[in-house]
Image 1: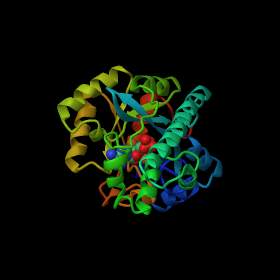
Image 2: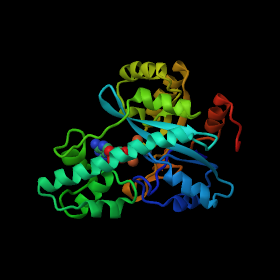
Image 3: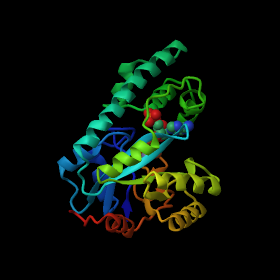
Length: 284
Ligand code: AMP
Ligand code: FE
Ligand code: FE
Ligand code: ZN
């Protein structure tokens, strides 16, 4: 069993990189990709700690991009575990934009009467806090009954405190992942569209831009969703990827490796096919 989608405290997960690796070993995973939002800091720490044992650790990232004017995520897998310096320099800009957004979001929330400070956000969120940290604080202060409600009413694109941030186009993000010998895959495709015909149209467009994979296995997928996306991948010639999208306590229903209520068991062959697709041998 493998898991190619997970988050640490370096983005919006609640396990430190070391704790995440330990959890993966305990869960019996053969391979784990750390795919924090817009940063390699979690992977870098996990790789340096070297406590992975038999676990194969894979360098990944989940980029926030704009596709047809909407926010769409993109996974990048660096199967040789060595993203280029140019790519690392580029994501620094994405991180700067996040910090700017965080400052503006605190000001907006304060303007609307919410009692919350930038200091609290960074104390909870660490080096790169995201909106889930804002939501957690707003819930803990009793402004909203749940994280979902904090998003719906306040923080989501349609919420009344939404602050947009500079996000690269999907086209640029895919191009940069490919140029850095990375493998680009579309995560949680059901968030892009629930209509299979619309999704297929978008996927064809994305494939033209250089997309090479689609996340067929994901905690939010029903068996029918998985079947549908497997079929799309096969017909469009896209590789299949999969992962739990584990975030720890912030999404407590999702377990590392096994997903939601045990709905995942991603075979090792998924990773082997990715590697053979780009000619990188295991543990290169
Ligand atoms: P950020 O990257 O800081 O803009 O926050 C994005 C993260 O917030 C996503 O990865 C999701 O985990 C979460 N998120 C975004 N939109 C929603 C939503 N409408 N409902 C619940 N969670 C959301
Ligand atoms: Fe997240
Ligand atoms: Fe995502
Ligand atoms: Zn994710």
